[in-house]
Image (spheres, rainbow, N blue to C red):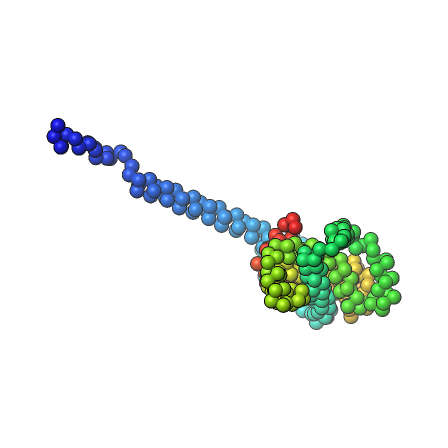
Length: 309
């Protein structure tokens, strides 16, 4: 047997077979096509969702520039030729809407700040310190979330009146803070539970106190939870009506929802829908700016608030 006969015969690959390199190329092509399809689906879904939310807002802005008589009529193409700023001018110059917006801004900002500070300290205590009955106390805090504040208006009014805080923006901010604290404590406790305990131990080894650890070490890590707490407290205070109607009696201390209610009606009780549309747009602007500013923190904080600790 010759050497040539001992050499195994390896036929050349035919044109119909596929080399390993060809299989990899085909697989990568399918992955790229799937990626393009997924991106196109994501882009389409995101665009449709954005239109669902943005079109009503754009329509409200457009209607706010129409005279009162056109706002109550069926829309037509000719309405675009009658756009005017009279609604905003009337609210700002005649009805002093900026003062009422300032009152609401003071109350909402104060409520958000006070709620964030107290909820952060309480959440830190519930998450880091274990004491007898801590679970029961935290459960009682959560139970208060189920009690509508309208059921407690009368005793709270009597309490604030005895403290001299009725018809007072500070008293109204304290009232709103009370009912925003349970949710804030819940979010902040679960936010602190997501942070490794070793960070607190390392800070204690370096001689940092509990307060120092909270302010210098843990505070940057819990910003999403703080942003979520501030956002919820601000939006609640900015749009709340019943509590403000109960505790505020002076016209110059009206919040924006109370002021808009009085501005909607003329001397004979007829609703001014032009003022209503313009006032609604003015009321939406701070909420949108705050949400856009805290959006990246809000999503992370909301997710940390639903994780079981």
